[in-house]
Image (cartoon, rainbow, N blue to C red):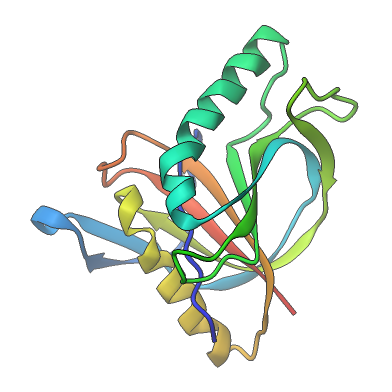
Length: 185
């Protein structure tokens, strides 16, 4: 089974499920990853930017691109109705592999996309989900737990991965919280 890599960029909110702590990171920082569970994630109207990129490209550009997007949203008086959502199609563990990424926010139905952005209905998704708390560059631990649980549960991943960044204090903060979700069949 292929491993997928996700990166979190910025966000808001907070949620916690049953969790276990694992050591990780520089200086013994703790990473917390919940047990995997299967959820039907609701669909919503999604204002986003779309790119073809690599994992390294996300690291280098996505944060700045999302900051620019939030500035445009403020200028156009478009309100986000939830955390930053990153949707990846076809991502895998190969750092040179190109894949599609859409990053944006839930918005009110009927929102008109500003120039350079798109609005679409992001459909409901049956997904295997874990919650992650810790430094952003250690999010791989969430995906390791997630993919380890798929085989044991008899689930097959689709090519869609979603990350919801629920709370953000800084790249190295142990208090960042995200939900990693892999579409499953």
